[in-house]
Length: 368
Image (cartoon, rainbow, N blue to C red; front, side, top):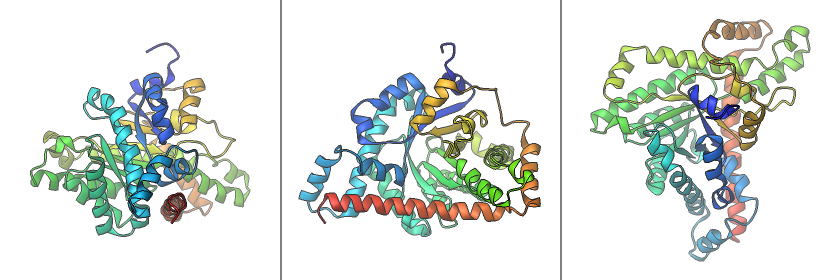
């Protein structure tokens, strides 16, 4: 690792750098390979918004869409064919990382249809279908942490499907997700699966918390409110890490660990800053802790490499201070439970809207 290699230092500190983006252009041009080689990128996450953007820009998908049109494939099946093609390709590009890290990294995530977020059985069926279609050991199936999604997470894991749990905003929901992971592993073991082959990350969303809380603080307009701007998201993520540590320090987890289970790493998602008043590396350098993932858009990867300044572990030792942030917000009438519920509902709605945009783009391209 060369001097000044911030992303290398981040990796050494136990934070895996993943890219929060995928497109066929990125794969065709070798851009992903260069990010792996030169910027320590060790995984890829995707979501419906990313795919909708990829499909609406350029002509990289034209040939496949023409073939799908000629075959008379439905728009729904075309969307699966298009997205799984990119995910398979990315899995193959990242396979050397997967092999070199013993399956810890080198992972690529593909989300189930977000319109199914409130339907458990359909989510399970879609997870099975995508797992079979991609057919790569370094795949993660993304399932949202909605009330209906949590049992689907357990069911998928119990069948040996590795899962990226997405759209986590609240500590309560995160607790349910960790429990769902343990139940899934226990059921997988009972079914005869080798649980050392099953992996998971829990995607805890960061910047959107500040966006929602800051909006409420700005409406208050007081000095006390202004002093709390930009503090909620990092505090929330740090308390999530505390919860992660607490769940690992239990007899239940130790029993699973002794049977070969992997930890479900916390993944910091939505880590590009939305407010230009904040440093563009804030949600990277302030969330450094062992056994975590930070998935970033390429702009944040480059920003961190260019001018990120690391201060060692920035999570341990912050838990009381983080709790104080939410106590102070509550005194101003900003309730935690309401904030995280709004964000979960908005997150599901936004991804469903992006999926509909994706289908509309494909429908237009296919002339349907």
